[in-house]
Length: 238
Image (cartoon, rainbow, N blue to C red; front, side, top):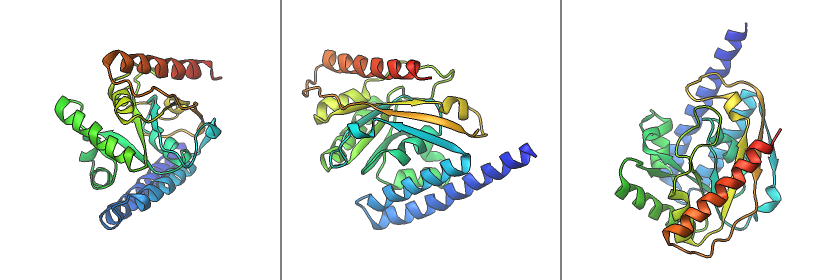
């Protein structure tokens, strides 16, 4: 019976993902502002979490202003992190995603046609161009989300951060907001297919001013500061 429930849940999640992806492709071609795409993404995320039985406790939502845009930097534990964040952050959000995801039929196609930002981690020149695209989007008034580890954790622990998010922060001059995600590794670890029901915590920290210092040392200092905040939140949560 449990296997049947897991199969039905996976089938339902696959169906709503394909359903919303098709509409996202259509509306991304019609509405170039990305507003409808963003709304569809939020509804997809909320329905997916409901089907999966995942409850989210959001802490610190009062730290961000709905009328402001930010660079959000999060730890990355699971594929369920994306709907967790999409369903609970306010405003227009653009996610930086790795190019490999664009190869997934339908789901990947809507990522490519939509307003999100594809990054080629194996090609430094193209990666820099992706950050410039992200910078332009920020200047138009949207927020950008990056998973600073670059990939999901294989053991549930925080990995080393990459500089990309912090280069973007210093070049754009926008405040950076640390996001701590806790509990998604237990719900859907890397390489697993079944989403287990459970509770997740999302901590939204206070925005950090960095005064636009673009030298390497400033970026690394900012990276260490954000990573330490996320680590402290992550390992102090019960």
